[in-house]
Structure formats: structure tokens, C-alpha cells
Image (cartoon, rainbow, N blue to C red; front, side, top):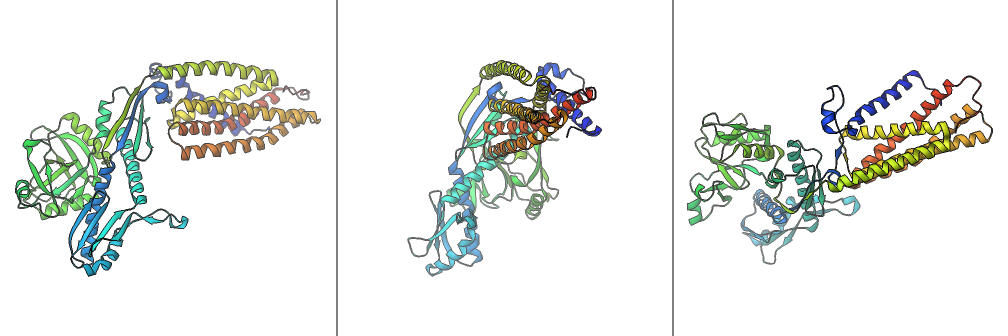
Length: 540
């Protein structure tokens, strides 16, 4: 086990050298690192909110808006199923935001209507585990010829959970488009989202970016009735009045409620300028499905206006001069240059499923982090010196090899964290210290095994070899169980717990390499350096 082939020696030394080079920038100020030659690594570890300060936002989802969107979609689906089943109805009304009441034209068709409406239900949960259910309950109404569609509790919980996941994904994309990738965005409770941005002091632009829903839709304008006429008489079924984004003077528009194309069909959106008047605009491009829908619509409605709606406000309602078959176009409105940039990012990231309200906003100063870093440095120096002295006192020359292994372990851990872009937080530092402790523990196990082999009378080289072999099994067992715990923490945890799990996982992997491979390689070099036949005493 003490024999190393040439390629193994080269691989181990190159790994150590690469680790030192990648970890090196973390020990110098950012300005110094930027002045280094271009071939030197310059990436540094990102410090978390608790170490460098930053912005802390807690957002709450609008549950009523989620329910409203759901019930509107459910009403459209119910209409379609009843029409497909050729069952007449005289009205579909809402009761609150969680149930629909359908009045049938013929009360005797109630059973057939319930059977047809079962198609709008979506299964949720797991039937195999006995938790299977539907998101909607279809019930007989209290009056003859009425049917009630009511959202189930499981359905509501799943809808809110889905909206939270979609919101987190959208915010992540918007933030990444700003070039800020070290943020922490996690769900908190049932309907809240916690956002932390280390190093960010001014949250104005950020709040504007994540505060807008950015729900873009393209609607058909009613061909013959204006919004004013509809308001004075009756709004046609399937149509709705939308205000203009230009305020009260911009007027209102009567649009078909069901959009022709939605923002989810956008493939790209970029800020630009109108070639005719130089005003800021947004150039958009649909995906294949959106382009086909938009092309078919404009082909059938040449000479008629269509409306571009953002967050339920009409940006513009241009007239279709000719079919738009290329799947691309331009959105103009009362935009500023900064506004088009922000809106383009929002459109590229997709719309939020619901409006988010800021319920808590804090700016954390870096003083707490500076104190923690200073205290951590002092504790690290005292602890490191104590560990080095005790290891050398206890194991002599082999103790020096163990200390070299600890340095390699620490540098490799920092290097891997830097490469994967991990954020270092206070819990992460705790994981780092725990990794060092496990590396020390591994060396203690190896050396105590070697001492046991020497006590039973084995020759020095045989005792060292047997010590590494026997200790390796114990080290692997203990560190693999810790690794399993760290992976579970990463899977189930969030925020600081995940940071701790990541640091601990990396620390376990590098400690095995440093304690077993690097220390064994150093001992192998030491053995080769000894005159033949003179290894009478093992310095352990």
C-alpha cells in the first residue's frame, strides 16, 4: 500500500498544486487579485449575508389573486366540457374565490353534467400511499339543476406550493439576468419567499425588478363595440374592459378575455429603439407554437386592431396591416430607456404567477460579519497552532506529515468551494472546522493503528502498511455515514443548513484524499529517503 506508481505521484502532486492555485486568491484583497497576470486564477469565494452584509427581503404572495386566476380558468374549462357534452346551461357564477355554481338549462341533466365536469379535475397526491385526491370536488347544488365545483384543501395547498416554486424560479432568472448569482431565494412558510442578496446596499432597482408581475398577453379587440358602449349596455360574454397604461386620458379597451398568445410563448425580448421615431421599444420573438398562433390570428384579422396587454393594462392596440408570420414584433408604449431594459429582463424571465408584496425589508450591515470574521481568524490561529503543536508532540516526524495533510485538506476544500461558486456563511465556517477535525481524527486513527502493529512486533515498514490498511476501513465507514447525513441535510434543508451541508460534504471528500493519500505519499518519500536497513524506529 506504500508503493506509488509514477503516474499516481504526478496526479497527487498536480491535484495539490491546482488546489493551492485556485484557493490562493481567497487570501488576498480583490484589488490585488485583479492586478495578477491573466493566466492566474482570480475567482474568490462569495461571502454570505451574515459575513459581508446586504439586503434581506421577505415577500408575501397574493393568495386571492391565485384563487381568482384558478377560478377563471376553471370556468373556461367547465364551459368547454359542458358544450362538448351538449349540455345546456343558463349561467356560471362564482361564490367567493373557491367555488363555481352552474345553473343547467334542464335540471334532469344534472347527473350527466356532473359526469362531464369530472374531466376538469386533476389528480393530486399519491394513490399508492393512500393520499390520492382531486384538486376540485364536483357536487350537487342545493337547488334542482345546479352543480357546484369547489376547490379541495389539497388542491389549494398544491396550487399555492406550485405558485411559490414558479415565483422562486422566475425571481432566480430575473436576478441572474442582472449578473447577481450569489443570492439566496427560498420559500418560507406556505406563501412567503425569503430573498437575501449579500453585498447589495441599494434595493431600489431590485425591488422594481422583482415586484412587477410582467404578465404579457395579446388579445383580440371587440370588432364592433367600444368599451364605453359596452359599459352603458352590457359587456358581451367572454369579453372584459381593460384600462390603458397611459392613465385616465388613455381610455379603455373592450378585449376578449381569453388571450391569443401569452408571454409564456415568448422566446426572447430585447430592448431597442424604433427606427422611425427613435423611441425606446421592446423587440420580441415568439417560440414556434406562439409564432404559429400569432400568425394564424393576424392572417384572419387583417385590418382589425389587436391589443398588447401588460399586467392587465393595454400598452398599445395597433391595427394589423398584414399577416405577421415571422413570429417577431415590437412593443411600443410610454417607455423610458431604463424601463425597456427592466421590462425586457422581466419578459425574458417569464411572468410571476401572482403579485408579490414586500412585508419585511432589512439592510444588514457588514459589522456583524467583520466581527465574526475577526473572531473566526483568531480562533482559527489559536486552534491551528494548538493542533499543530499537539500533533507534532504526539507523533513526532509523522505529526509534521499530518500537519501538511491538514493544510492540503484546507486548501482543497477552499478551492472546490471557489470552483463551484459556493457562498461562505457562518454555518459554512462551522462545516469547514468540522472537516478539519475529521481530517485530524483520520490521522490519529492511522497512527494509533501503526503503534498497535509495532507493539505486536511487526517490522517498521510492515507496521506502517498494515496501519494504513486497517485504519482506512474505519475512516471510510465513519466519513461515509457523515457524508450521508450531509447529503440528507442538503436535500431537505435550505439556506444556512445547505451551506453547512455543502462545506461538510466537500470537507469529507478532501479529508480522505489529504489524510490517506497525501500523508501516505509523504511517508513513502520519507521511507525512500532512509538508508537501507536503517529503519529501526518509526517516528510515530
